[in-house]
Structure formats: C-alpha cells, structure tokens
Image (cartoon, rainbow, N blue to C red):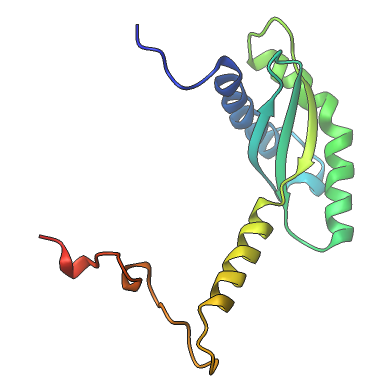
Amino acid sequence: MAKTGFSRADRVADQIRMEVADILMRKIKDPRVRSVTVTDVELTSDLRIARVFVTAFGEDAVTRDVFAGLARASGFVRSELGRRLSLRYLPEVVFVKDVSGARGDRVLQLLDELHVDSEGAKPRFQHVNEMPGNKGDNDLP
C-alpha cells in the first residue's frame, strides 16, 4: 500500500471543514453567522482542538457581531459534528478570523506597485506570460 502525503489529522480537518460549512449554512438560525465562509480547518495532532478559519465581510463592528454569534453557536456546532462524524474524541471547535485573503490582496497590491514604471504610466507586465523567461501561449509547439 502506497503511503500518501496526508495525515489523519488533515483528512479529518477536511471533513470537519465541509461539515461545519454545511451546519452554518443549513442549521444555524442566527442571522449574524449567515454570511461567513469556512476557509480552512487546522486540527492539533491529537485531534482535540479544531481551529476553524472563517471569513466575514463587512466592517469591524459587523465582524465582531459575527464572531460573537459564532462563539455562541460553537457548542451547537460541536454537538452537530458529533452526530455526523464517528470520532473517538470530538474536537473542541474554535473559530478564528482568516486574514489570508486580505494579506494576499496586500501582497498583490505591493507587487503591482513594484512593477509600475518610474513615470507611473502603467504596470510593466500586463500578464504573467509577458514576463521575461516565461513562454507565452503563442510560443507553445
């Protein structure tokens, strides 16, 4: 049997991500948590704590309300996970704000600023294929 690159914690985390997204979308009645997106789940190696990364769009006050709703719903989410998953130990569910999207946007903005000509007219490279060393679509055999 070939060994895969995924640990049991990774497989369980992926299953938890799908189930939590479904629970938040279909089972939770609190309108504060309707607009969240579950982006990732990280499990500790002993499968005791699940950090559920979520994104919530809106201002800081709206985000605070969303996380207050998630904190209130975490017990229900955990009990619902217990019904859906067959695990010896059900992990504690901790909701965490995912800031990777905002970080990615900032990195892209900084890269665009680096590629702007000294005159500020336009970015030097409009497309990845136009960068030196990259073959464009027209160069394919």
